[in-house]
Length: 247
Image (tube, rainbow, N blue to C red; front, side, top):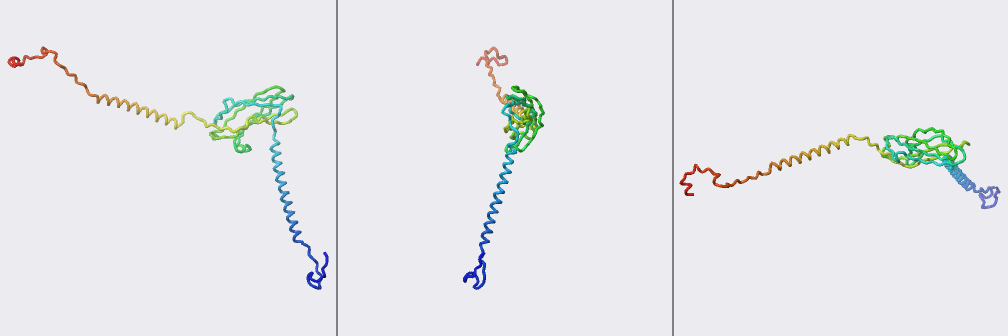
């Protein structure tokens, strides 16, 4: 700092030091630090998101050397509280053995497949499939009865690995399905409906019978006029002879 002893530079006759813009420097330093913190925070957030994406993408995928197919035994109908059975076919197209470890199925929330609704027990297989060979696996599950009439995401995974220990997972089925409500034969409403229809039919039959009977009763009896064919048919012995002569 340079001392100022000139007139008009502070108090006359006194030594005065000219102050540099410390307030401006402090303000600039504050803004630089604030921007640095924001950028650092964003980088941390982006790093966390990238880490999550890496974790999600780090899940096992299907091997290009294998193919899978699925066949639902009774069609793609999923009745609640009934057995759903399907077959999964596995084809080894590679040159090394595959070890099929397990087969699992689960119902997911249709808007978010990361949320499990019903998780079924995994079926252990531990089956070796040589190159250029096929294998078929059977699996069955029972949808819970309260799930009837609502859509759910059905995910069926086949888990296998190669001889080098590389783990693979193939989503054999990954679609939204609707659980069908189970019809348990005759319920109370159905029985009441049948009884009502039977009673209504009986009333109709009785009404028709009464209508026919009433018509028969109201029908008049036709009188047949019996004419005299000859006078010989009439006994005239009681008529006086004089009267007969006048006739």
